[in-house]
Image (cartoon, rainbow, N blue to C red; front, side):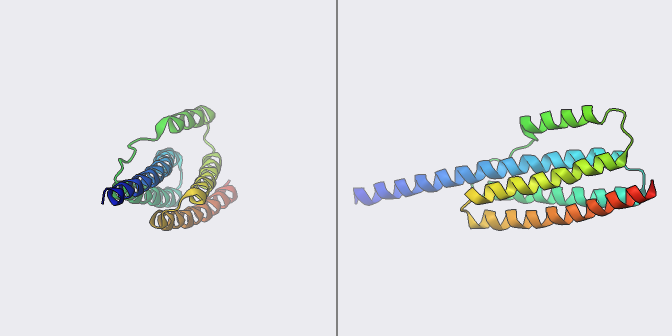
Length: 165
């Protein structure tokens, strides 16, 4: 009887370790989604055309939705979701702000957003390689699919912006 209880505790610890790893990974992705939301605030502010603003707002809403889904998943795993972009996000935002001082070129902002979407996909795929939680994998694969849709939208906006100039 004692042995069975002891083995049960070992199994729970293994589950706790796996959940802890998944929670940490999901929080990393969550911070990336927060960074995307903030980045799109700047893009929307600098967009000149109403159509461009509307499309950027749609993309930003996908990131808000992803953040909400990830928060729920983290809580369901027993964790606490991040509430900010984290230190990496602060550094990235600062660099981006410096890089765009005095810039009025919407294409530069759109290209940066495009790169950020690609980086998001890469980060998620790296986490999926280590992630054994199938419900997290499903969520992350759905987010990758939406990032790809965002990439297609941004490519269209970049093409439209170039043609308008």
